[in-house]
Length: 321
Image 1 (cartoon, rainbow, N blue to C red):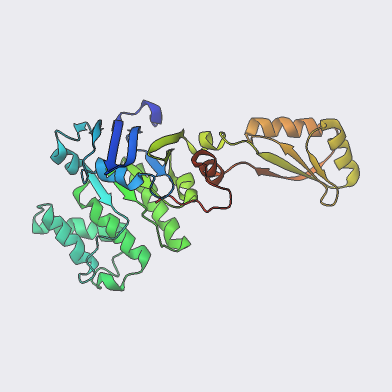
Image 2 (tube, rainbow, N blue to C red):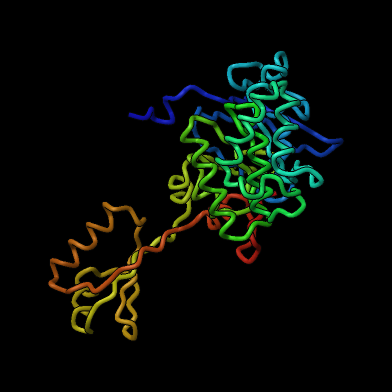
């Protein structure tokens, strides 16, 4: 049986993390705890500090203050041990376009100090795992966006990291390639890898993340599972569709709540969308002997959460750079 996330050892802990550039405070004392073998997503508007947080945690930028432990190592005192435990896939691909996919992987294996035979075996395994065998000897410049991203992550895995930072890994990919990347991330976590993900696609965080933290103004303004965050925003409802007007009238009269639409024979009733509340509603309607032909559950999504906790206007598109 899998260990509950909250009972797992922490892969990453950060306490009081601060960073300023000149007079601009980018991170204002944030705390993070990310359990091993989970996906943790950082969301936030442009300039919220997501990329800076990733750069600090991956040893690329030094924090002004705060304590960080990654894979059991102190970030400031043991940076080399931290680097040995992590892999980073940034917003921009690290692939060398002049080399083939196979050559890119072999070069990475050489940088890690693998012998020739071990490097070729590892490269072959990664090419197969990421469905790049047919394109292995073609220049990376000829690869599609999805293929380049798969190669980029394959190169990150050469060092067998236990923790991977993915900074907007699917930006610019078409929907099919994006969904393919989601499967790769899920497979990584099923193998025990911990993933810290930043993304500009709220649906992506909803689909992948075990927990989500929202950054705004350098502070964490919300954190929880996707379901917990959605419950922060009121406004969910269930729409019941009836077969005829008498059924709609009986249900509407008996329930005494909701918004009725005679043209569509529907009744919209406030609900948090949970199984328990929907079942109670249907049991109540059934007692009126009004037959329900169908129902739709409409609950707040992460877009609603994002706008609510960051103070953005409803007509502005959510971005999380």
